[in-house]
Image (cartoon, rainbow over all chains, first blue to last red; front, side):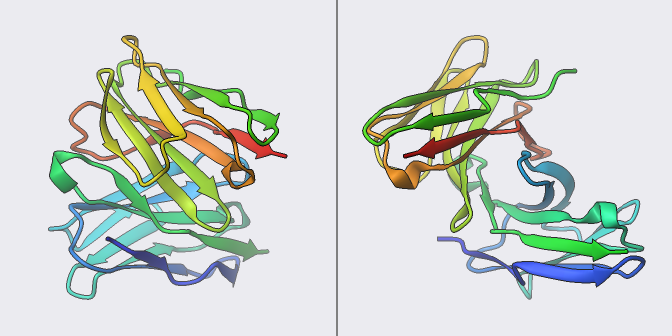
Length: 114
Length: 114
């Protein structure tokens, strides 16, 4: 079965720096890879989606890369702010058997200090 | 446009009891998925419904069941509760076809089993 690993449980950085979060997967490549943000006690909120034939996607201060050779996605937040502090989840869309079910990583908790 | 609504937000049950959780998807969304989130396992897929039919199921025991109604509202039920069922149960809706893959999550139902 597909396994997803996010590089660390927690990441501490200073305000203004670029945060880089890693998502690695095993086995076959997904059709899509998505990133979500989750605040404590809340449901995840969709941030970005990247398709298997795309190398990079940007949205404001966010950038996602997708390397199907390395089986890895990198999620960058540039000019990070304390308000970016949250848990970030990587999710794969396997398109298995015609269905679309997301498989989530356990997340990386990002803490941005002033 | 109203988001995904889950009820109840919090509940406490004792071992052996059963529980029913409710989810109202975004208007127009006919597909609903359920996920269980625990600190140790992260987000785990439970089931996915489309037009009142379960079209995918995760690796959970038969004590976990669900259904979807003609208005796309969904319920999940857990019978004979165990301590390990304590978790945040998240419902997500998405547009038919799922070409974009984005899930819209509710705030979740926090279940505590004593």
